[in-house]
Picture: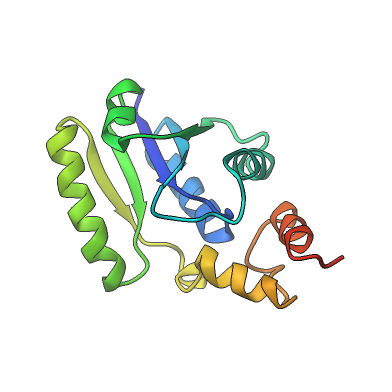
Length: 160
């Protein structure tokens, strides 16, 4: 069985993330969506909230597991015997950072390849930070995120 890990903070999950999950499932038998606790980021949503949103969003999807993790991604890849790590690349600026991570992960987990996926054109400009900024000012985010995320963002920012 070919297992891939799709890591990220998913704060919150977007339609761009969902696009990569669906495309990852075309390439791999199982996809582990690994929600990272990144000490360099201050997430809007707790790990549990992010986990719940991702699980609700992919409910019924075969071949996908969602989990929270801390620590090194390479260690998780070894533990899960993953053959690949999926990373989304929207622009050249993403690539430079992702390339550095891929090389480090290759050193730490030599049997796990990093696979870069380019999102569908309609999602290349999406980022969780942009969506949070729009939601903070009660902007319409319905076409960018699943319904549960839209509702959770409204709750966080005090809109009904």
